[in-house]
Length: 412
Image (cartoon, rainbow, N blue to C red; front, top):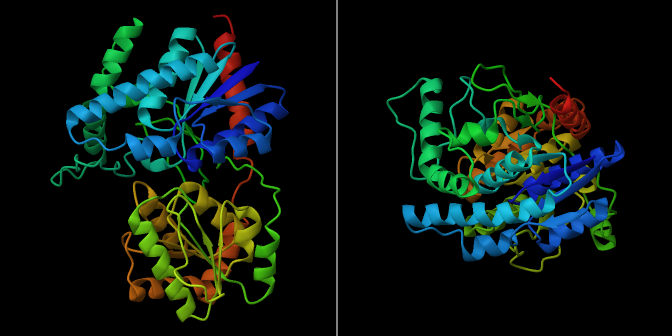
């Protein structure tokens, strides 16, 4: 049996699929990941022993060169071009497969859905945050340029609005793409790609999914890839030289706001007598000086590092939030985009950290948030919650995927 796991996105989209691939391999399944061929992702898959089927271009190249539509027409062309290019890449990778599990940017997931349909493969969509799935229990994420109508308060109506918005953004490209392939047109782009029973790979303690008639999602728990890498020797020496430091990192965020926030974070840590470990990340963070109380690093094993931190200050991506929560490290989330403010809100509600209001902190605002995170009661609560976080999400998902393949093969 062979399963293709497809995504086009950042580290937070790729690493969970690698975790699922490892679990599938353990069950005797040949698992392949189609992902952007960025060097860091190729190295990640190589460490895990999972084959990489390259997507149409590196994601960092795409962000730098193409992800800047100036008009509606530009956006539609961008979606159409990605859909076509990813269809070719995914089609090649799906040869001999029994199923496709897809996530990532919507045009890429749309292409995966079309490949599965043409090849007669089992298809499952996965998302890593409840926010993106329809439910009367929460409002949808407002797409840029398409704010939610302020006069509408009923969440069901807002999800209808969300479906219309996604049709406006992606429907034209999807209709043209499917027509060229000889596939029937679809009226609801969102529900077509997400399906009526998507997999939800997020932790049910950190953010529980509540049953709703709008979507029959299956929450598996987060898909966590075990990381056995040792920490760099120089970092170990730094950690041993003093009290636990503050981690500062913004992962795949590349905006100037992340660079500015990191400098303020270092200043706030120093003001509380703390050292800092800074992740360089996509924003290419720098220290700004050479005082010796900060250590800057590239890609590092968060599973080994976070338990040694006094607090973790980050952007609020789903993966980093889950890793910090599992480690029992108090958090300060400085959200930059999309779902990150909502993860920040969950961390604050659970009492395991502080949510900064907005992406550009001042010294005063970040110092207040760090004070909350470093309070003894926050550390105690973080340790308690850490013991409740599931680690078997990818194992649960692997069995669900195999069950789905078996059910679809079963004769009527």
